[in-house]
Amino acid sequence: MDKPVILTGLRSNNDLHIGNYFGALLPLIEMAKNNSGKYQINLFVPDLHSFTTPVDHPGLYKQTLHNLRLYVAAGLPIDDTNIHIYRQSAIPAHSELTWILDCFTSYSMMQRMTQFKDKSKNLIDEQANSSEITVGLFNYPVLMASDMLLYGAQYIPVGDDQTQHIEYARDIAERLNSKFGDLFVLPKPVSEQHKFFGREQGLRIKDLVNPIKKMSKSTESDKGVLFLGDSPQSAKAKVMAATTDSYGRINLDADNQPGITNLLQILSLLKNESMEDVANEWVGKTSYGDLKTAVGDMIADFLVKLQDNMSKVDENSIINRLETDEKLMNLQANETLYKVQRAVGLRP
Ligand code: AMP
Image (cartoon, rainbow, N blue to C red; front, top):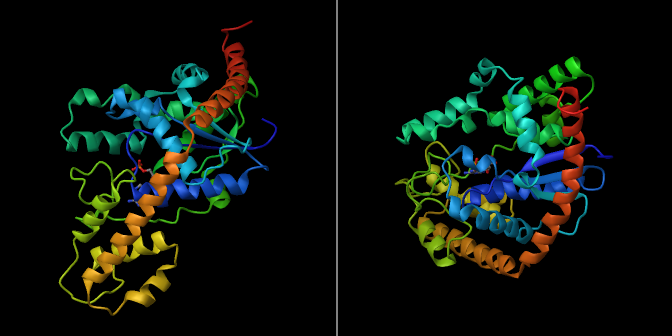
């Protein structure tokens, strides 16, 4: 760990949609490319975190490889040795450190985590079985702290919903450092994270059927969600059936014409043009059908290219990369874990 570490995780529970692609995946790849060289970049698959909410167990392993292929197809440089790709579950130190940190974390501290409150409320709203609200969901911020502290990660791009988890990781690291001597490098405070990465752009692609809600894989119906694995024809059909309004004139107006505005937004992302340019071309026109056809054709083209790129990604190159990086990450993580084990009296 000679260079400062940037750490970020890519969950692989489900098929991703275009909101994930433009809102998370592309910015993450850009960030990794821009900082490679000056920083060590840890791009890990938090597969142990997958179990904090219901998951398709038989499909999980395949989904992990599928999503890594997607990242490579979207431009992640697989041969850049500054970017480390690894599975959390392949580094046992994550689980071991979590247990130790658990025993230094008060129940009341975890109870204050708003993510747990929100996610468990969502499960209750979805009328999930109460056994689905697990201890794993409750204390996953501790696993998240281990993810960071094992590698001395200083920069972790997170949304506002994860702010508390960075603060908790700093807190536990500071407390153990003052009790046992310098064990951990602290993640930077949230304000510095924002300075480093820039605030989240706030991009929110909306559901095609209900454009008041954000596009999300947890929505009951797939009709409003453009999945990256959709066939180009079915994606176009979803766009053609998108909810619009009865104004009869295209405007950029998220409050009154959320469906049309969402289509303009999607078009600007697919064409890689500013919203201003897209608006110049479309605002004032009256045919919603023309706009839908333009977006539908663009999404179909986009999916043809992306899926073609994916089919060309050699899965062996990903597996080789995982094996090499996981060896190195085990060395780094075990060094930290050993320091902690000695400090707490488990080792001589
Ligand atoms: P999720 O798995 O739903 O938490 O999504 C992972 C990440 O994808 C989020 O943190 C966002 O950065 C991004 N994302 C998810 N849904 C959307 C959306 N509808 N529009 C833009 N970005 C999104």
